[in-house]
Length: 455
Image (cartoon, rainbow, N blue to C red; front, side, top):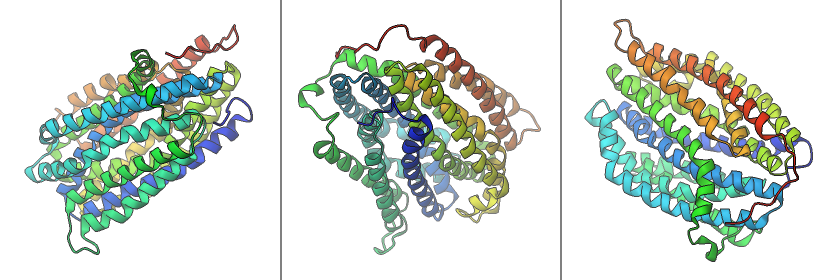
């Protein structure tokens, strides 16, 4: 356990964010390696990877429910110095992870074909997407255990073991991807099957390594067989904090699915460009997400210890760091957007669509960083509903206007991206306003910290 309730706030933030960012860089390499070898299979493969991979947003929504609830409760318990409660939350989280994994596999194999067919513009894209999804689903299911264990450690102020495991799994995937997708060494290319299988095998190794760490080295929270029995009151505590962030990712899934739907009329080139561009954008977002991931336990431990001034200082340090990171990646997207897309495909139309996407969408990167900081703060405070409310504004400010624009004779793809920039900026402003209101209400402590009873 690492105590975040004393010492300089910026130092804690950087100490946690830096290794997380390193892990995110390796995660970026995983995304780009996968995309590079899949791109060799053609535009339908890229589009299929994007549409099937978009299901990861839905799974991430559910992992957020589990991960954020686990992290926030353990961070607050750590701030109160309540190890017993932290341990119960951890073990109940593991039980929930097993249940979520089973549901993911059942729903994915049962309804995945319907989802791919609804978004894909042609039969080739449907085939590519379904093949990838079939072999990718086990990896998606295993992510719940990985998120549960990693979130528990993050709540106690520890991030390095999770990052080491993440780097190992990414390196394994980087080795397996060319072997399984392109047939390097074996002479047996597996195509989209190999793309999904290499990811699933890598995640499986990560779960094994994290479990070994908890069994042999972790002492503050640990596996306790007696505490794995379902305790509905603890589940309720986890879900009360975790459901709104899960809703945020579910809305992001709707947002992404809507874009794939509205771009169908522009053909597989446009969808391939959006798939490649959004993967590049996600890669750029990873360092900013690392800052958000560090912000949440830092705010959470200090909130649990009822140190309001340190909670406010956490937000200031987080926004400052986020802005610096996002300005750099914005500049990169403004200068060489086409070169980034061209690294994955030589199709001139795909490159043109992708460059236009990155150049326009990068205008909202700073606003996105502010949203990430607000999200981390809401998680630390254990009040995540405002973040969901801010995200939900996109349903009104983005989807409804784009539906109208798409039916106009002058409609072009760039109009979708400009609408996105406007709505993200509005969301950032709304998020800050909600956060300031939440801090005014919750940081006026009038009594000493109390130890919450274990349920």
